Image (cartoon, rainbow, N blue to C red; front, side):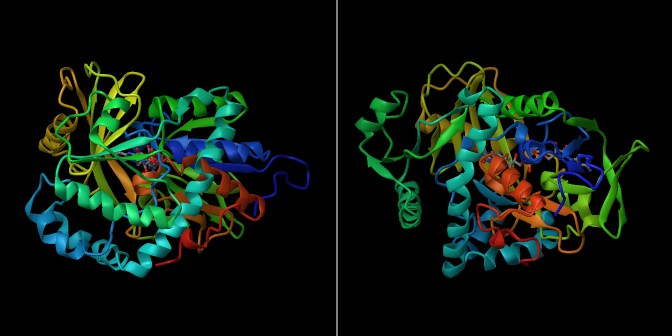
Length: 422
Ligand SMILES: Cc1cc2nc3c(=O)[nH]c(=O)nc-3n(C[C@H](O)[C@H](O)[C@H](O)COP(=O)(O)OP(=O)(O)OC[C@H]3O[C@@H](n4cnc5c(N)ncnc54)[C@H](O)[C@@H]3O)c2cc1C
């Protein structure tokens, strides 16, 4: 616990490492509690994985990536480098420990537990954003128009129906539409689809990168300090971290540290006890500046493992999973999955001038983030490993970290997210 003020009345100093959506939201919530917060990043805010995601604030994200039967899919993932879920076989030996835990998390009983924990976080995810966006004067950044899940094949439809059962067990609304009903909502959808489901509880942001930067600006406006620098270590005393050391030779003095360095949290936080099985699921995006059709709400592809989201500056097609290594060179061939499957569900799309991006999801094998104190150091909090849902869970993670730092009972039970669960 970090008191907001020390015995002389000075505000306690909290250093947040990583200015992605998670770190920025943690910095804002800690600031609201009266801490003097320094947000440290080697880049400008929002230029890590938070830069290029699919912009979805999920209302349905209760399904872990590993589900029963995943083991049988592993050979296919190794053999098809262009599948929606692929493994770069060169990295198999290095990935093996993570993969074993990933498969262990796919047991039916574990999937139920994981989905309950995710549902509890989801219930608070949007209200936590609302608090921050209202305070920043930008509530319009999030729109609530649901999401359409389009299936172009019977196999795709079957996978959506399988997911539907789990969603309904968690009380999440799913509606099966006729193709004509779906086309009334989104006239650009293909007439050849075999099925469309509607998830009314989904929301999205109109621009995910601008969301991070405007929240970072609000943090600075309220007296927060942004520090550019590459974190290389910590000076640690009996009461925990005393300063954060930067490669540039300077350091940031502090009374507490929050580690929110996304996929890089293990390397940025080893000295803080961050030895969790964090790895990366690599994803890609295409952003079409002139898509030639207007979507009112996001549309996902059951076959392609991606989502098409209307942003204020174009249409984003983002997703797929490639298990490899942090920093691995992009395999731009994988954009074929996005291009071909998107054209199947939205045949009029214009890909001209599309920009491309590769991003590193910070992924735990059980699809649950790490939110809680370090197992080995006082005054040290972990906020990483959000995998496919880091945007969705950014604000609620920030709120929970502030609760934990203040010694307040967190509004969501954080036991499933504890750092020492493996
Ligand atoms: C293709 C794709 C689509 C996605 N779609 C969605 C979606 O629609 N909805 C959703 O909820 N999630 C989605 N995600 C996941 C989401 O983008 C991530 O989970 C989220 O961005 C992680 O945020 P973060 O703040 O933890 O990490 P990041 O945004 O990566 O931020 C970490 C920061 O730490 C900094 N850093 C790292 N190491 C150091 C160091 N040593 N010193 C200083 N700074 C350091 C980095 O520079 C970076 O800015 C998607 C991901 C991908 C790849």
